[in-house]
Image (cartoon, rainbow, N blue to C red; front, side):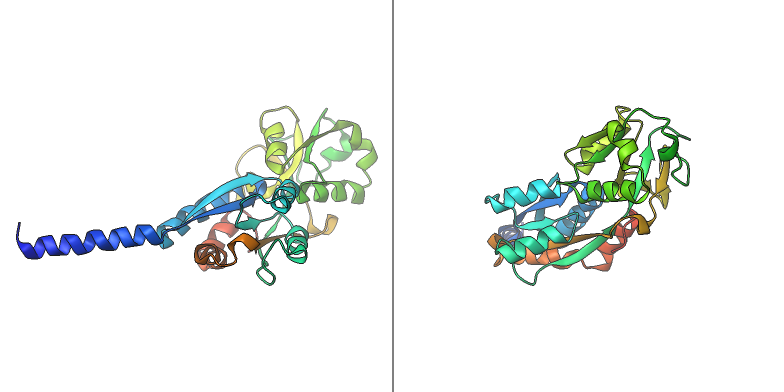
Length: 251
């Protein structure tokens, strides 16, 4: 093999090794409702930057407790705006790093076609045994569900039928497996191609609950991490926003 080719191969190997050495892994806590879009965004982020976002999904309230107790997360994508603000105030997150990456939508959904009508009247008729929600103290979508039921004057009537999941992911699981006939979940969990992809649904009007503003925040342990800062910036790009919109959120 000619010496010039060997020299170029050597330079290429060094460049690749250097790039690999600069790549980082970032530990990211992600609200369960944002599972599907964040998986796509993380894959794009790795392709575009070389950095790998290691994702853990769960309930916002549970993540708050874990982060407060030293869990090794570097970036937190919450399902509300209050929890990241609290972490900033307590010094567990980098002050001024917080921003809203998405505004979520609540939906009453059933895996059964035709069970949920377009106006949500099924809630008043009560022709079901179980309705699932996420735990209100842990999950903002669960709190929004309770607020909706109260605004409709149905909380007392529906209380005996409620089953609670630890996160919005578990609430969705209850409904999708038939353990509950219907439930309040995140629209993103059943939204694809501009419509609800299966079952039957009622998108809850925004005037029935407080806005579900979802904030991201850089955690204190990652204040000097360039890769974590890059992920925070990446969430604001047009490429990431397009993914967010595709799942029924407003960026």
